[in-house]
Length: 297
Image (cartoon, rainbow, N blue to C red):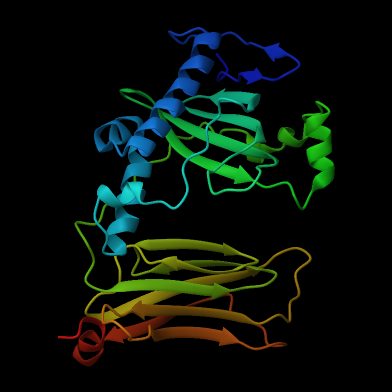
């Protein structure tokens, strides 16, 4: 039997054959209830329910990130500045299921509770099926201000925007990443400036990062270690990008001493007009002297 593909839209419903215990209609309702219960746990700061309804890979990713910032887990899960949006008044445009993965696409006034009047935008919820059932696997917000024509088409019932593969579940179960054992000793961040290019980084063979045509910093999972560390990178051009644009890759160590600026510990950089290496490794050393600056002892 081909993998189940379920498409629920405002205009039509196409239901293929399914060997699942739940009917297609029940599955759609179950996924919606899963998100609503997960969101309620976030609002109520209910750690037990959050763990029960969150996919294992996402739990490990969240815990790794918090511990890499020397923050408490699970308490810091609920310290986000915005609340997960309610889907009660949003329109379900597509619900697609492929194997043990699913995506539900909503359109309407997505409200994160930060004030101001929300506008019509897209909110995508991903799910992953595990031994104990379907779990919340992530949410994506697509702001349509820069593509107002798409917003008008969606408002008129034209859902072709959701036909691309970006809006389809992959059918591939994401495995959990390697879990770090506890809060890191030194907080590190990877900074990349890469207009018109894609940069892949890996720090200490553990912390993987993808940057595409952006200027951004990511926390390094596992932090920096005493002694020798390394930043591996690969750089490739993006179609239409400027091959002469500058590229900057850095690793910063974040001091725990009040008033102390971050320490730039590693860098690879090319100026305008120079061609960057396709790949390479930059090594850096956390010496006792640097450690003292970071910890104050």
